[in-house]
Image 1: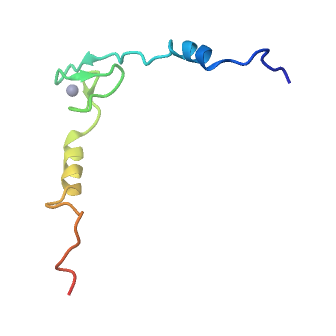
Image 2: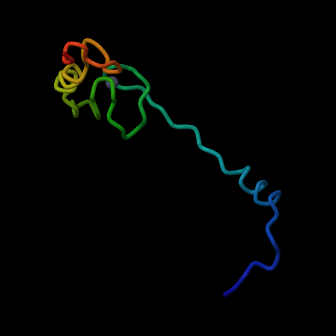
Image 3: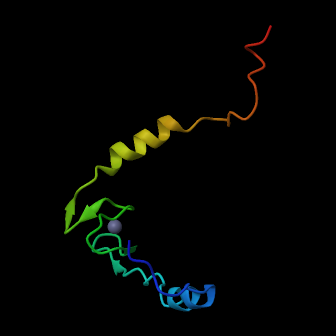
Amino acid sequence: MPQPKKKMTNTRSGNRRSQIRLSEIALMTCSKCKSAVQPHVVCKICGYYDGKQVIDMDKKEKKVLTETHDHDHDHDHKHEAK
Ligand SMILES: [Zn+2]
């Protein structure tokens, strides 16, 4: 098996990796609601892409409403215990 001739020091790998960084996420404005959206990604606020309704936001809102409760469930239900 071929092996590297010299041990790569922590400094050398660190110096190389210093050039690796996340590029800034490109953003464009939504043609419908003017919010910042990623290109080639459906707008999460209004569900529009390329001037067309892709996601039915009405159905999504209803789903959210059914998932939410009047109270959080961190506590026990006292009325169930006798
Ligand atoms: Zn939008």
